[in-house]
Image (tube, rainbow, N blue to C red; front, side, top):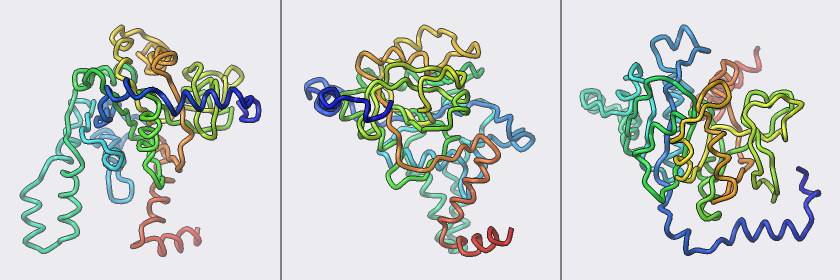
Length: 316
């Protein structure tokens, strides 16, 4: 929907609803302090590397994909990291656990920078691990973490495949909007070419103010000619706890899986579903091209290697 198509009176009405909800209900909601990370997938696009190494542990510059997502969450005020994972991914637990023998060795060798880098992992938050026995869709993965989310507690969902470089963490951008909408759910949106919408969930926007949208409907991986817009949902969500009312029904949708998109539709009327075209650059690290692109971009921002990396790129 083009912004010019919205009449002034309607735009003002939306602005009031969007930013000035009564505080009586808002104060009942807890601060958003928990994030669910669905990471039980097989990572088949990176075989044979992911036969032994979880896809989430593949390295972007000097940290695993998952750690970059956890850092974003921590910078956004998240304190509880809930990993919905597979029993075969024990290396993830080991990575975020404290390794005292290694710390002692680094102290002995006076490798201060390296010591700080591994100790900082333990300061990112508290970690909880939930086993998803069988991948049954994103909705099912979120449902697996239900007992760790309290009543009246909104929460975040982060898909680590999407690494996003931004001045303000994307999750923080979403949390800021959610807190202004009296507990509304907020989706990270990215506009893509129409021919690519079949890869994503797509919103049908109702109203728009700058890069904020109210959502009228959602469609999971539509054909380009049937897509309601080019605004796609990417791997960051802030969700109202009431979504579990629908996820508990375990209804199967697209691909015969329990889709998060289907349950999101139940939040449209109350307490509201919104989208934000975030500020930042996204890299799809679930694809080989996106993975390489992320490494290049992170390398260019690293002061210790950026000049030499630029020379290498220019020589190609």
